[in-house]
Length: 83
View 1 (spheres, rainbow, N blue to C red):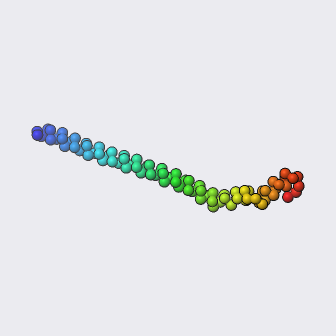
View 2: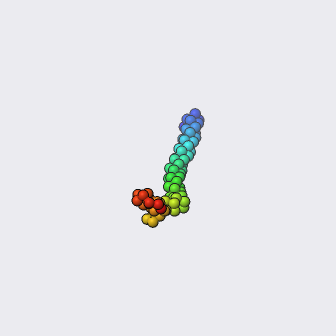
View 3: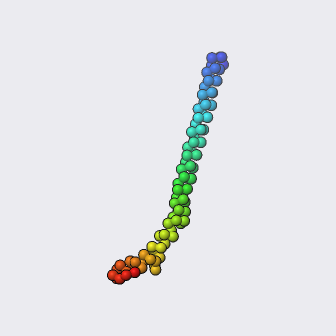
């Protein structure tokens, strides 16, 4: 192998190693982004559920359960009476 061919081979080898390093970094970024999106949406959905259970469910249950103030007011309105 001539010195010129050896130099070209070494340059090519360096380019291949650099390309491999860059491709691995891109693939690592894709994997982290994929799992990051899943974790983000799981947090959003679970956070929304926790928010509902902690703050809104007691308020909503007052309007849904029979015998609540809302049901009494609705019945009084429908019968034309006073609550």
